[in-house]
Amino acid sequence: MTPTQRLGQLRTIGLLALVACAGGSTPEGAPGSDSKSSTSGGTQSYTVPQGTAVEAAITDTITTRRSKAGDSFTASVVGDVRSGGRVVIPAGSTVHGTVTEVKEAPNRNTPGTLTIAIQSITVRGESYPISATIDSLDTVRKARGVEPVDAARVGGGAAAGAILGRVIGGDSKGTIIGGVVGGAAGAVVSNEMKDVDVILPAGSHMYFSLSKAVAIK
Picture 1 (cartoon, one colour):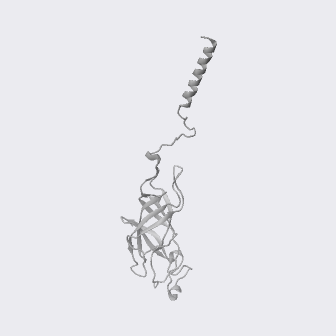
Picture 2 (cartoon, rainbow, N blue to C red):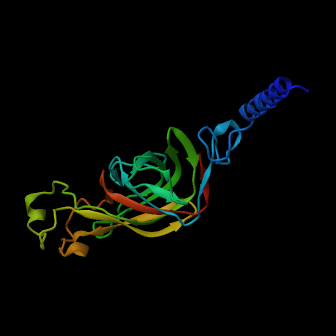
Picture 3 (cartoon, rainbow, N blue to C red):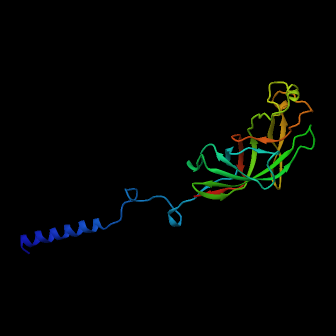
């Protein structure tokens, strides 16, 4: 083989090597690679474990005066809920619930009760059924427009006719919320008060925890 033929052979081998490299796969971690495991369709689910706490603000006022069994309500998630360092339920997600039972005040001394249940949550436009327990409620005092004679009997600076909601138990229908008259906030309310209803004002916060884990895409 002449020197010219040997040089041509070396060039051919080099060219074949370059072609082989160009046709190889992209190294893991290089641009264009995907190191995440994913489900079919390119979506991935993350599990929010049982016991995860969620804080949400009630969208519309719920009260024993106007609400009835079967009424739906919504609440907006206040802060991001994370799982494994990722935001799985972002703030602003919508919680959906139902008023399952309403008991009006039996007399002027005893507030009525509301029973509510959380049923689902909408995340990024997709709804997921959830099972949850309401642990506590933040409520505010709300005036009810009582007569001047009744207002005069209210002490301690609480708004006249104010009733606060608090979790007082639960049953198969959901979480039972009872009323606490203004005395719980430092006021003394007359037994003559007429408007003794449980009020969960719009914007008040509720805190609930998941009874079962839920997978969110």
